Length: 294
Length: 294
Image 1: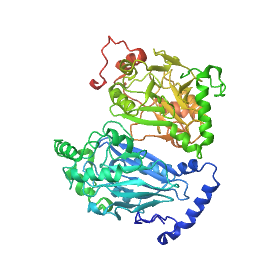
Image 2: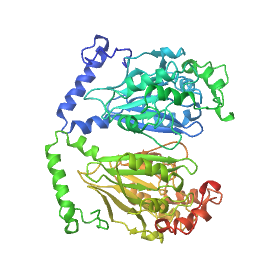
Image 3: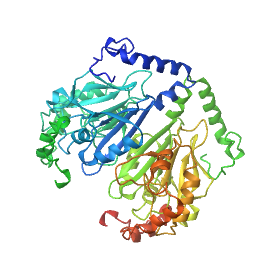
Image 4: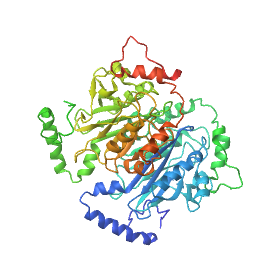
């Protein structure tokens, strides 16, 4: 029902043979749109969106749901182990059906909540990129679409912070939320970006990723990163193209900045990375890591 | 140009004699609306909205601006002294003209940024409720409207956490953002509420305020509080009416809960309250209080 792995080139959403079960609901939606006096209002009402914050690691978790769909299917992007109960309570209170727990990459600063979520809601499927070389129920690649109800996220490969980083972008289409929203993980932060000195990081790759995959989106696209340390909650592509202190530079200058950050060794990395490599299939016999002890 | 103190009963926004300078721009806006194929999309594009977080006191500051207006007039709700430079940088980068720095009440847990903002941008006017007995450039009362461009906030008296607490609600009208947004200060928090044992607090008053002034708004109204301690960023009237663990109770039960919270003495109150009582007109000869030392 919630199809995955459609290449981006398959833009004919209503003609895909692999999506037969969705045709009726898409047809119904189209008819509703035609009837609606204000289609834009109708459209915006479909997406329920919540930004959630985990203070210790300054991580943002995002809840998205299609509340116009009878099932109210929902997904969580970058859940944190410590806040899983909060997130699942909210999902329950809002009457949503959580179907996916998704990571933008293998985090080094906190333990993902995907494993814990699956122990509490076994029907949830975990998702991470194939390039991350991690275990999960579904391994995605650039061009895949992650459908939840009549909405979807498009997968863009944005390596450089880690080898397997991806950015999830809400769908491109008149029946999808406007403006589009990009969940950039650590590839692009608000007025910053993730470090490039661990986990297969590469300043050259990150520069190319951000410019080709994120800055190529419409300027009004909303940027929702995995972290913010100064209290910002959102930015836009246009703002980062104009004001990001690192990514407005040329590539040589960017590489020089990234090579001279002199950041300390990530304090959680030795615990978080091995755990997050099995984010979707955390072994229940292994005691969950308590991130608060670090 | 940015009229204040229109009573709520003056609902005829386009007929007010006191608003003559605004008629042309309202007329222009109406004509644009008539031309726009998707009026809802056009409307939502008028409001620029940013939620900003101050981690030490878990305070939310809100930036609102009418970006369809040539001046891009903006206001800040509940700015914090420590994050004034961040907020003013953002205002500048976004090309906004900050006209008001507003408090929902006299805060006891952090020092307001309104005084510092006025030293850096002298044209900004500070606003707080008359009932707070504080000093500010403009003292507002229930029923007043605070205009910024073609948008406005409506003032609702919501005492109970303090005697002078107000809630600011975005305008009621087809030319104002939908759904409406309520900036509730400490009167209503997400799944909680402010304490009632200091600063003229009253559990009876708070209960009445929330039920009569906030829960009477449409259920889809977005709730943006002054604080959140668990990482939530937004709620709705409908959600709080259904799930707020305190305010879903009857008044007697609510009073009993509030009387038995056994909270410690607020650690910042002796510094923050005297300072915040002169929020809008902070004496420049007085050294600004460094909240980080507490």
